[in-house]
Structures are given as C-alpha cells and as structure tokens.
Amino acid sequence: MRRVLLYTALIVGALLALFPMIWMVSASLMPMGEASAYPPRVLPSRVTFEHYGELFTRLNLGRYLFNSALISFTVTVISLAVNSMAGYAFAKLRFRGRDRLFRVLAAGLVLPVQVAMLPLFLLMKQLGLINSYWGVIIPGLASIFGIFLIRQYAQSIPDDMLDAARIDGASELRIYRSVVLPGILPILATLAIWTFLATWNDFMWPLIVLSDEAHYTLPVALANLVGEHVQDTELMMAGSVLTILPVMLVFLFLQRYYIQGVMAGSVKG
Amino acid sequence: MTAGVRPGRMPGEGTNAAWLFLAPALVLIGVFFFVPVAASLLLSLTDFDIYAVASAENTRFVGLRNYGQLVKSPLFWSSLKNTFYFALVGGPLTIAVSLGAALLVNAKLVRWKSLLRTIYFTPFVTTLVAVAIVWRYLYHTRYGLLNYGLQTLGVAPVDWLGDPRWAMPAIILMAVWKNFGYNMLIFIAGLQSIPDELYDAAKVDGAGAVRQFVSVTLPMLGPTLLFVGVITMIGYFQLFAEPYVMTQGGPLRSTTSVVLLMYEEGFRWWRLGYAAAIAFVLFLVILLATLVQLRLQRQRL
Image (cartoon, rainbow over all chains, first blue to last red; front, side, top):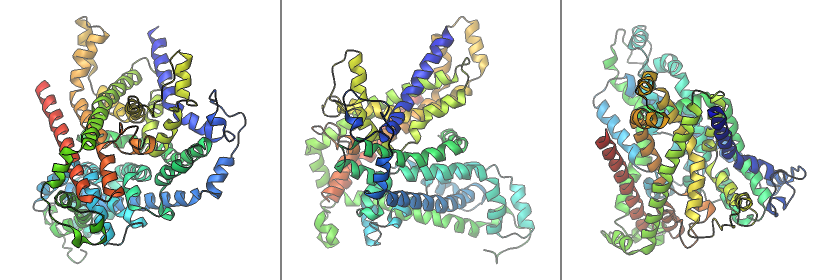
C-alpha cells in the first residue's frame, strides 16, 4: 500500500516535471493555429515541421544557433584553461599572500553579478566591444566558482608526484600540462559542462551588450521574437525546442559529470 | 618559465610560476568584475545619464541624491516588495518541494532512482527564456492548459499573467518547477550521508515516520538546509528573466523586480547613475539576507 502511494506520487511528480516540455514539443509540431484553439489540444492532429522550416528560412534562427554555439564553445574552452591554471596555483603552489588572496576572491561570490553590469557596459563601450561576440565572451572567461571547484579537486594531487616531475627537470608549465591536467580531468569535464550550459542559457548580459540582431544569442533572439510573434504559438514553441534541445542533449549524455558538479559545489558551501 | 628550471626544487619555490598561472584569471576577474563592482558604487553617486553616455564630461558628482530619489520613488518600493514576495514565498516553497522530492526519490522502496532523479532535474537544465515562453502559453486565460485542467475540476478561469494578484504567484509556480531539481540533488546527497543507525535507534525508541523526520532527518540536514537556503535566496533576489519574458513587469507593475527596474532605468532610459543606486541596494539586500540566514541557523544549532 505504501509502495503504491509512493509510486503514484513519484509518477505524478515526473509527469508534472516533464509536462511543459512535452507540450512544447507537441505544440511545435501542430498545424498553424492548433495550439491556440479551444478546447486546448495536447497532441497535434497531424504532425508538421513547417514551423521549424520557417524558423530557419524566414526568421534566421540558424544564425542565432551559430552565435550561441560559437560563444558558448569559446567561453568553455578558454575559461577551462584560465580557471584550471588559477585553481591549481591556489591548491598546490606556495606564494606569499595565497590564502588571503583566495579569501578575497571567495568574498566576491557574495556580490551579485548585476551590480557589475552598469560599469561593465561602459567599460565595454570604451573598449569598442558593445555588440560584438567578445563583449559577451570576455566577462565569462574567468569564474570564481570555477577556480573554487578546481582548487578543491587539485588539492588531492599528491605533492610527491609534482616534486618528482620537478626533480626530473620539468618546467612548471610542463608539469601543469602533463601531471596536473590529467589528474584533474573529471572536474574539468564537470566544469566544462557547467560553463557550456550556463553560457548557453545566459540572458541578461547578452541582452544588454548585444543590440544588433546579427550577434543575438538564441535566448535574446527568442525573447525578441515573442514580442512580434506572440500569436504564433506553434512557431514560438519550435523556437523554444531549438533553444533547449542542444543543452538537453549535452546534459543527457554527460549528466554524470554535471551532477557531480552540483555535489562538489554544495560540499564547499 | 622554462629558463628557471633547477633540479631538486621544492614546491615552495614556484612563486613566479604561481603568479603566471594566476595572472589571466586575476586580471580578468579584477578588470571585468571587481573594478566594475567598485565603480558601480561611484557611479551611484553621479548623475550619469544619456548625455553622459555620449560624452562622459556631462556627468557630475551628486552625493546621495540618487538614493534620496529612490527612497521617494513608489516604483522602487513596489519593486522591492515584489522581489521580497518572490524570494520569501518562492524560496521556502522551492526548498519544501525539493526536500519532498528528495525524500520520495530517496525512499528505500523506490527503484529506478537515477531515472527519477534525472527526470526531476531536467527542468533545471533548460533555458529559462525558452521555458518562460512555454509557461506563458500554459498560463493563457482562454487556450492555456492550466485553466483547462482547473476547469475540469470546477475552478473558474484565472487570468494568470493579466491579474495583478495572480501574476507573481504564477511566476513563483514556474520558478519552483524550474529550480527544485537542483536543491533536490543536494538534499539527496545530504540524506544519504545520514547514518542508518540513527533511524534504527529512533525506531527502537518507538518513533514513527513523522517523528523520525523531525528528530533525525531535519537536524542532520541542518548544514545542507543552510546552504540550499542561502543559494536559493541569493538566486531569487536576482529575479529578472521571468518577468521580462512573461509579464514585462506588469500587470500594474506587480511583477517588476529590483533587477528588472535596474535594467529599465539603466539600459532603457540610460539613467545609469540612478540604476547603479538600485544595484547597490540589491547588493545590500542580498548581503543582509545571507547574514540573517547564517545567524538564524547558528542560533538553532
């Protein structure tokens, strides 16, 4: 009896969690007007891909898909290098003021990013980076959270291993490349997925720094489209599917690493 | 770096190398985060506006005038009220749902744990803007499935996003759906770290399921609850994309959050000095909320 109740609750919960996304996919495949009819339909009367076609032909969604992919990929690759170098230095290299510096950085975690955005906009304007990919990319290239995560993991690399490499005459860069990076590979995977998804899903900063459609990321383009096409439910749902699908695939295939990130982040507090 | 190689160095001697490894991150975080945060405070003491955007010479130091204006602005107070509404109702609700889901998924009887965990976690991974649009349609007064479902239960249609009383609850409901999976994962990890012996001992003492939850589970989850509480609150005080996409801050400004107001003042009307004052208030609110939670938790432990 308890088991039946438990499973009923779990299945109802799972349906509630998935329903908005199921309806999104279903509505994106409905013929025009069917998603705003009464009584509302859950499944399409016939399946059509015309809205997806329209997104790519008339509404230039391929361009935004490309922008989002390019920005997310660049941020992920560069920030992995930047954060892993810093995290490793904080974990394993000794230098004066290390712990104090780290505490200053950690204190930065309390500062909401929005507080930085107004002056950051003016700075980007000075640098001529408004309305450019780099304007979106640069603020994401180093993250305090990323450095935290790497530092925590890198502390488990045995000092003996690093010293052995030093005694063999390896340069510090060489040690980083051939001892440290392989040692922290799992956390790099975790951080890579986190960074990619966070950059892909980010909205406020790209909205601020991008004003010209040619550079829009998918979320910015979508928020803009819903203004003009709010009546075209099926079209908007197709756009939403295309925005969510890439992150969903990345998550489903690499969820083991992603979920480890949640745990690692929480242990630290 | 390669030139400085001597055999037999000890780890303490890597000072120069350390700074080279740190430099990119420190420069980026310094220039593009810490300096702007500090500049934000200065900006809030100026009358920086659209003329100053064109030429910075058109800006003057005005002391606390922006803050004086803020205190007198009804819109600011209502945005603060809306943000607290969202955080203080939505935050605890999200945490309660997360904990409930964690307890269900973690129950001994349950199989397919990892599949269920993945399903519950999925909304968290989705793109906020996209799902906000999806929910906008689900909330539609006439064609939305939510009202249709309620109607079959005999509830009259609600104008979810068009009624000032319902718009914020609607946004909260969506936020709970979107975010509970993340906290759930953290709670599951917390639950799994509670030793079985504690439950066994409670059972021997004749404690039922509810009693076990109150006397064993909740106290043992203390630190996890604190962590989840703090990050959920910090996140919720930054409410922006949901009202931007679903209601544009309306109806009657009932969903205008502090961050949305900052965005509008700063980037729609280009009153950057005034917007910086709003940003600084946001910072203070988040700092205070964090400190209060830390204090509360310490008292209870």
